[in-house]
Amino acid sequence: MARQTSIIASAIIPASPERVWEIACDTSRYAEWVENTLRMIRTDGPTQAGATYEELTRIAGPWKSVTRWRVTEFDPPRRQVHEGEGVSTAKNMAVIIELSPAGQDTKFTLTVRYTPRFGPVGALIDRAVRGSITRSQQRSARAFAALAARENSSS
Image (tube, rainbow, N blue to C red; front, top):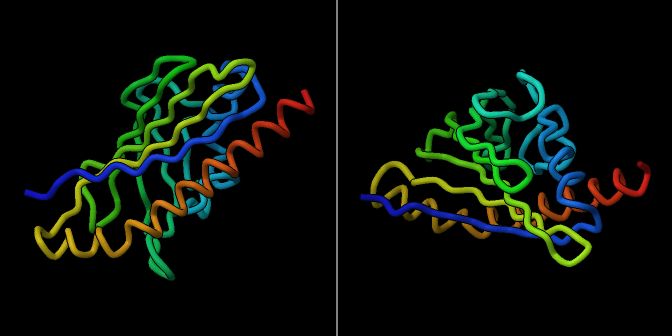
């Protein structure tokens, strides 16, 4: 059985958890900071328990897929879990957004979790792309931090 993969990136944001949470819940803006989200196709609006959305996602290079997501955990302003499907090489996909106080600032943690498909071949593919996924997660966390810092300073 394939082992679950978790890739975690975080950033410190000079804003309150409540302000960061508000920005993290705006699904219409995910393409602004989630590196592999090319565009939002459909969204129910701000994140809440049970909310759904679809996006056009870059999987690797020119390979794209429509991914569908549902918010399965929603604990403001600390944690939200989005479970998804639409990547042929992965199952049990989840994106987890967590916020925690960091002095006057907020620690933003972005985790992607999935199980590779296709047994041993899928495990090899996963090992080959994990570095790229990790770098993408780190860039997404930094882009979110920059967006949230800008939004906080302009409010």
